[in-house]
Image (cartoon, rainbow, N blue to C red; front, side):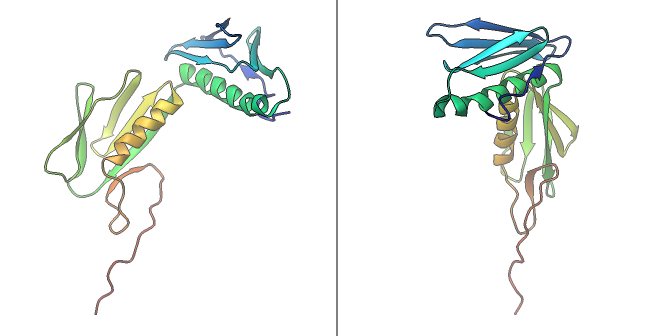
Length: 183
């Protein structure tokens, strides 16, 4: 039995969770809360059951495919519940002389040492907030989408190993190289 898959998911107040059938015997789980609405189509070997304010995820048989989807489906639904009730956040820090960020409307404008500014338009459901001009907070209900947006922003100027300049996650440690040895 999957250790993750057999754990129950409590549904907090203010979150509505519905399980409906789709064509082909699959189920669709919809979670709606204060931060938005998310949907997940389950594999045909996985069933979600709601009793009161508790959701359980069960598998139909003991095949390798259904065992692998059991814990995954439970974790995805749990992340959806947490996302629509509390939300997810990634914090990025910009290091380097003259490197900074600013918001123009919803767009993030980055000055990262290139000859032109980089304009990033966040996707639907993602909010970008600047704590200072060098600290970027990415917020949203979908955990995967928040992580992808943070990775996209980081990829514009990843941290380099000699001086440590670039965009990094808060708390990320960069292994520094020594550089050239003097003669």
